[in-house]
Image 1 (cartoon, rainbow, N blue to C red):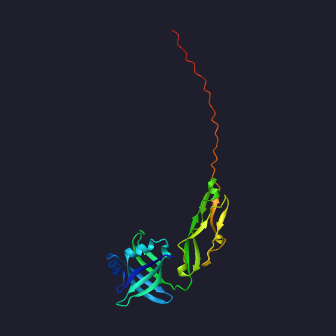
Image 2 (image 1 turned 180 degrees about the horizontal axis):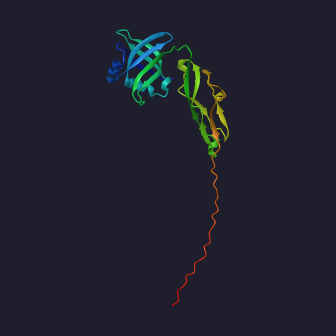
Image 3 (image 1 turned 120 degrees about the horizontal axis):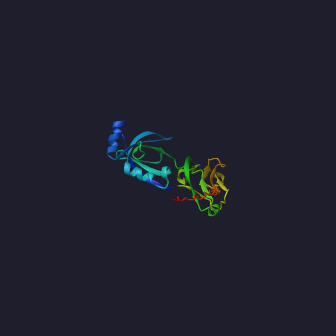
Length: 211
């Protein structure tokens, strides 16, 4: 599991006006909370937060959050619980950090990555991925960036299910009967053969006028 270091500062100002002023300075208002932590208002660098969101782990990235508090900074292990964007979905407005304990199991959703080219696809079949995430429970340090599922042996009509996933470092919570992917038969368009009847038009004889 990827792990980053992010610096935060205590936030004293509250309200929409204060939040706008912070964002104008390149800072993002944030809040830290957890089962062992009372809510703490913070600010973090927009640039550094954006970098954390671009990792392979995505929202499951583990962050060592270093909080500047006078001469005695504290460090907490956190995850991104929620990130709020503007109405265009581009600018970050606010983020929630959730403190985790490395010795306590947590529940997260992890992307499913299909590996290989199905046998059925070589015969014209179409690979259809139905489920793209799986819910798991494990220790924070054991969260994978993604879970790979090999589909290379699938023939036309075959499917792979959640029950086929092997995850030894925790539990899979998603219904084992759910389908992850299936290979569909190729779609054959029926062409209608239309018979075009040729119309025979009798030739018109030109009559010459005789004087």
